[in-house]
Image (cartoon, rainbow, N blue to C red; front, side, top):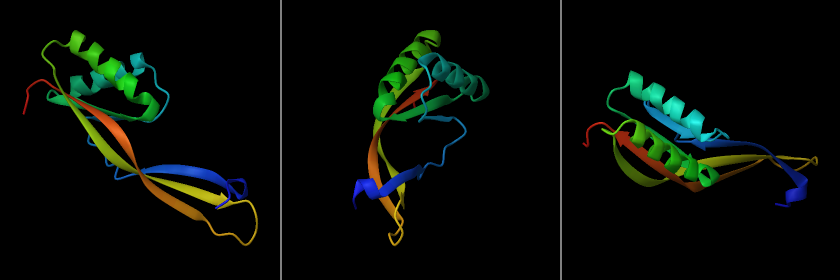
Length: 118
C-alpha cells in the first residue's frame, strides 16, 4: 500500500464498550477538564472511576489521578497496562484500488480510582 495513494478517513477504537464510571481520554482534554469529568462521575457513582488513555495522553491521566487523590484522600489507585484494538480505514485516491482496513492493537494506560479496594 503506497501512502500517497490512500487517505486515512477514520480510526475507530473497537472493543470500547465503556462502563458508566469509565472515562476514555482520546481527545485533547486538559488535566483540569479530565479532573472535573472524573469528579462528576465520582459524585454520581460512589464506588470509583476508571480513567484510560493512550499514547500522548497517558501523562494527563497520571497527573489527573494524582490531583484526584489529593482532592479525595479516601481514594485508592490501581494501575493497569492494557491493549485496545484500533481499526484504521484508508480510502483510495485513485480509481481501481480497494478500501484498506488496518486493525492493530495499541497499548493503553488505565487508572482505577476506588473508594474501597476490591
